[in-house]
Image 1 (cartoon, one colour):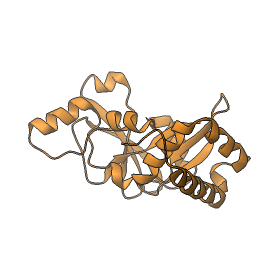
Image 2 (cartoon, rainbow, N blue to C red):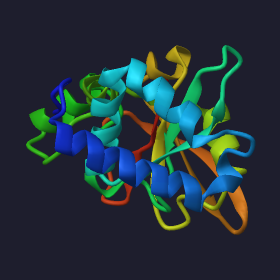
Image 3 (cartoon, helix red, strand yellow):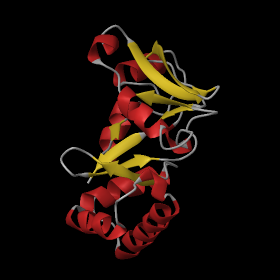
Image 4 (tube, rainbow, N blue to C red):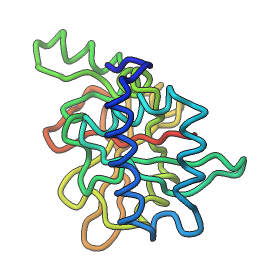
Length: 187
């Protein structure tokens, strides 16, 4: 999906876009400075390729804080589940089942996220993201699902309705026009 080596003009355009988004949404990353973010990105050029993939698929990545180790966290902050990552099954087994039934599917969350170099949000991370704004009020996002659920053929997804965040279940082969997935990247 993306090359690990971005052209100089792509890097510049992406960094400018990320810096503008960072400045416009300070409530998502209080206490962080853009200079610190840019310094981290300079040390991890592969992260730029992942961020570009997030951007190109409609994720609108932005910094949402730091983790316990001090790594800077980027997350898809588009109002709705990224448009370019919808119509996907949860995993490869689900995708194969749909393809066997001759139903169109754009791929699966786990393979696509791995190709982009990001992690799908889990349930806790999704709830934390929802504290930073109102996301998925008209769409849904697949969430990283515990193995004990996927072993049984299921997967979980979330959305926000009626002022609350809901997490539901479905079978892994399901896909819907309004269901995609959000990712997270540590830098």
